[in-house]
Image (cartoon, rainbow, N blue to C red; front, top):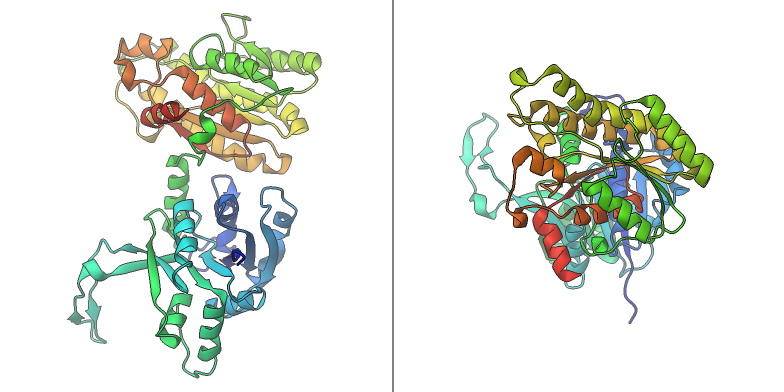
Amino acid sequence: MSTPRTVAVVLAGGIGVRVGLGIPKQLIKIAGKAIVEHTLEALDASPHIDEIIIMMNAAAIGELDHLLDNDRFAKLTRILPGGETRNDTTQLAIAAIDGDETKVLFHDAVRPFIDDRIIEDCVRALDEYDAVDTAIPSADTIIQVDGNRLITGIPDRSMLRRGQTPQAFRLATIRRAYEIAADDPGFKATDDCGVVFTYLPEVPIYVVDGTAENMKVTEPIDVHIADKLFQLQSASLSLESTTAVPDLSGKSVVVFGGSYGIGESIVDQARQAGAIVSEFSRSTTGTDIKSAKAVRRALADVHENVGRIDVVIVTAGVLRIAPLVESPKRDLKDTIEVNLIAPALVAREAHPYLAETAGQVLLFTSSSYTRGRAGYSAYSATKAGIVNLTQALAEEWEPSRVRINCINPQRTNTPMRTQAFGEEPLDSLLDPADVARVTLNVAASELTGQIVTVQVAAMRGAGNRA
């Protein structure tokens, strides 16, 4: 017996009235990409999905045509016009899919934080059930009221769930439910599980656990929350994929700040992986990263000698501990110039070369970007600026296919950290070699606009599995 295929249907029929930005909400850009693109990335990356179909707002369907020719979404086969209502759109999708046993996942385009665990749980649950919902417990007490706004009931919260998507079905089941509903003049349902529940009451609907992050971007505040979640999340590189350095044979890698610490480890590992590495720093080449002229000359020399530039990595940084009012003006200026202005200069000068190769810039932030740290406020501010710079440039550079990502290592055993904080227990610090390995895996990926967090415990676990 052959294994049934799994089709993900992305429901993108919304018009974004509540969001209030004048465009369909699924096209709103967050972290450098339209929301629907983030959703597609998660579905396309899942090994449990065989095919993806988008049901798009018919009035804006042309806005997504470019995705069909995009190598990023190999599983995307069709973009079809949706109907006037959510239920109409579902029925159009059902009509476009073959095979009674086909597993179909209906997912909101504006739930970009869907993760592979939810997808896998839904797909596997369809081996036993014909209908599956995704939901999370309610953190709030739910009350029932009448037309006079008087409470008529307070259900037991432990038995209540807040519905999300995906909602998953065997195709024959959801098709049959809608066929029966079509004969009901009073048909009304807010979601597809509701159609099965009402018109096929004999069919049990299994519920898998969603996540709080699997939110739906509907209101204006949701856009801001989603933007912050993208800023704080780690990119989804599996730990298994970071136990080895990828093959970089023939790649031209430029490292600014590669004379010690993480930068030195990146240089060593990249060379071992076959890359042609060009390293620049004040101590080794006399290159002042704060000088646009010096950066421009360095990149031009590499391009002339090697013929191409594929990756530019900036690890240079300074960290000085002192309250702001006690910091010498020179230290304050140096912190801002080296940690924020210099990476922006490097990115600007590198762009023309990277546009030739569809290459990538990799910058570095620190965990202090999420909240300003007393004692090194200027450093924290520059690291927050690097995150915003990364996400903004990911959007600016999308047409040129130049990617940019940011590595966010936890505490790392580097000379800069030791000089600032003194000796610390080694088991509480990352090894620079681990951070370098993750960095080069990102360099070899198709990610862009991502903040990739490297955690001590995670890397220790990866090392144990290697």
